[in-house]
Image: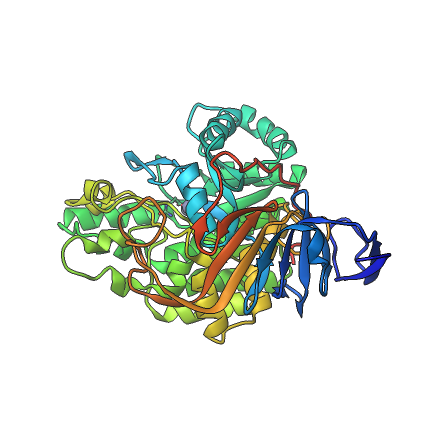
Length: 493
Ligand code: URP
Ligand code: ZN
Ligand code: ZN
């Protein structure tokens, strides 16, 4: 290529003005990698263009980039190229229910990468009597040298004295700008309303986001004790003792407390229409209330638990699976922006050795399910091929909105000049049957065993490094970096 070449750059570049512009680059400009022949899909646009990557960032977006100066070429023919997925809800290497979640930061981020997710936001847990700093340090150590892609943390607060309240601001400044609070699991994680409210006031002051596990833990505990007294110990009673009304009530209370405190609130793992309606009402009133749902609530139902023997333990997580009619309401919620994000709540426990702990008592089954690997396929398949929403909305739900809500945008969550080259070459028409025999999560079962999905991740880049190439892992443990997130800006979508 000789002389000067004009490259047409599309809206919202990361470090440039937001209007349409022409950029001019020198004729000798080379790229580390060029992705060519693909169709770029962002949350707002769909167009055919090549992407040039230099030093881990997107350096050019144009028709027919000069391939002779590229060190590596990736062919995206018949594929879409999307920003790397961002899963804002995972529990890697997490002690819970007398055991520890089965994926650590190496196996968990690797499985995520196989499925097109290049950023995880995990949870650092502050246990009673500990500082928030201790939680953050502990989880940083768990991830260091292991993660194959980038990661960040929310901080779970289980006890909130004056010292922890003081620490919230410091953590926000260090990039841990969101806090998960529990209205469930009394005696373990649950906070009372006064503590929740204090945390919300503090979050509002420092630009933090409150992520809420919204279930009425007190009422659920009574139902659980009654079930056990009646000899109802099978896995399905986990679901039958956690009614949707208990989630709706807590969602409504969380939103009310946040409204008084003037804080944004993000409802995690929303599972049912009762809770969805509360979020919709709040958003109709213009409140900064947000919510995520997860693939298991969109694709599975209570019927999965009503099986002989102990098989239902595979689906013991919280909130539980719901009656099937809720699924359609959740898909609608995603299409209409009542729900902004799809995360996984990936919290894997092996069926044989870990779920087994609760064979005679459902309350002893470690709560959680594996899901980090197949989020993009499950949502593309059900959402885009299922006619619920566009491919742009899909990108918004799995990457752009998570980045915006949790202070990672525009470094992550879009395809723009200056953004990290976290990119996924995704074949929208390839099919795959999900199975524990082929998945990469370190767990001995799949919640979606035998399910055929249309839309498969082929190749994945994390900051320009190819970590999955044509379905094969090419990354390296320890190459993932901790991401210091910005504060909540109030303009998530
Ligand atoms: O059952 C679940 N969801 N386990 C992980 C912890 C939580 O509440 O998110
Ligand atoms: Zn939770
Ligand atoms: Zn969770």
